[in-house]
Image (cartoon, rainbow, N blue to C red; front, side, top):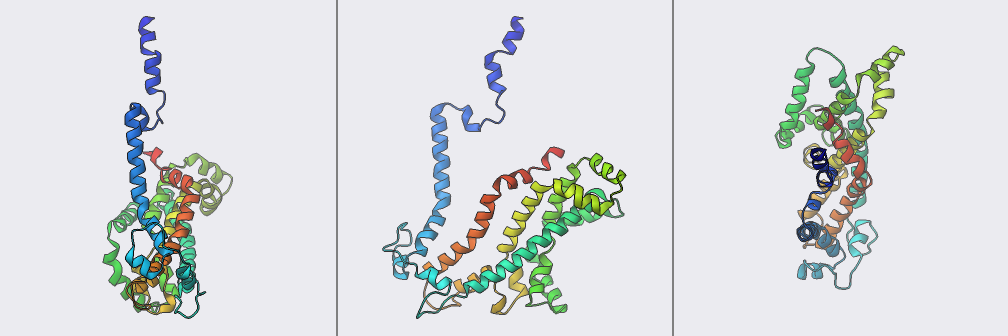
Length: 307
């Protein structure tokens, strides 16, 4: 009996009773304080560029050039944001709203297409038995390993051959399917118990009906993950738009800002205007991630229990 008490005593129970306890919680209090202080320092160091970006966007050009590292502007002004949104008088405004409209259009279409087509492709690779399925999945993995810069010239030649260069179709269609999204959805669908699909099949449901009405509603965490990744990827896409467009009317935020930074709109450094444009362009992705952060993390780990 003593042996049982010794093995199941308070000391041993406390040692293993909190598997989800933070790593720093296992150390003495002084070490924990130092650890949290180090984490706080790294967090502030990581946030410093964003704080500088925010501060400089409210500065005048001379103030930003003279004191770029100051976190408080000297007086402060909204001139940069007025120029971005076409409200400034007597100066050249930036076609920011045009860039924003193109980015929103392309991002919405690409995100919707990727969620639909990646889900369908992932379900087909996970559940439908057909010749060459494993080979096709190997090609998907191979595409994930190919650097995107290698495909720039082939993309340009294909778009030029099909008459899609410098069109919205050429901007959207090549991005509608993503190998990483197919992989994520395939891994999730393989974790779904087959008994659920077999019960639906007994009730007379076909393959597409099972996918659309039974399995897809269960994949909400993975769909949210795919939506966030697709939105972020298409919103921040640059190289594809660089080789698929030429005219300024098709500029997105990324290509428009690139032309702006390279001196395409006026002379001088214009640091406040450039940083204001970059700051506004990052807001949608940051807001989306903050809103769906919990679902995003859950969806990213949804397929880990299968292994």
